Length: 192
Image (cartoon, rainbow, N blue to C red; front, side, top):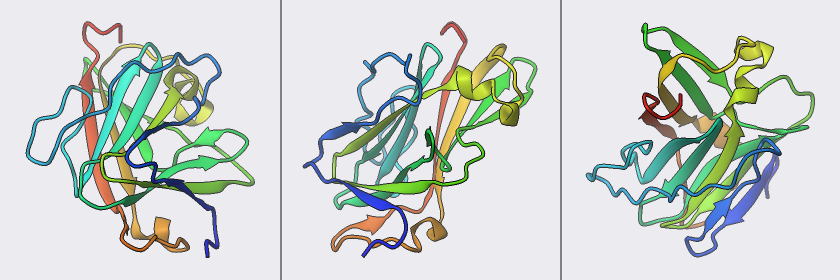
């Protein structure tokens, strides 16, 4: 019995589930999910496998496309998003690094009164894709209220903790993914 939030069953035999964009103007993704396995190098924007999960982050214009891919042998329960009056994430964090070494953190969450934290079960080979209007999130007061400009590197992380799964039922044969996975991309020459 799920007491808080709901469990999205994405056990579609490893099929890719693409989430709706957090911005109505975001373009559809053409970026393939990472195929990195433990010990293999990953394409630009996709980090190393961490305990069976690869986190990827790429930019398509001002849209940040994030992916969670299960590269392990068993289903993983991952925290997907927070549904409030808009789609948010308490687990994805973005840092923009300027050419002068300055760091600017962009959060993909904001004030909310009511919300539901959503989880997904990723079958082995399954991928969860989300799209975030990074320019719109950067322009919010919480994130400095400034336009995206001057960054040479984008660093993103996906982090969950044990308490994120406290009120959740993990299906038999699956396990909750708890940890931190990172991704980094160069924005030099990419219009960033």
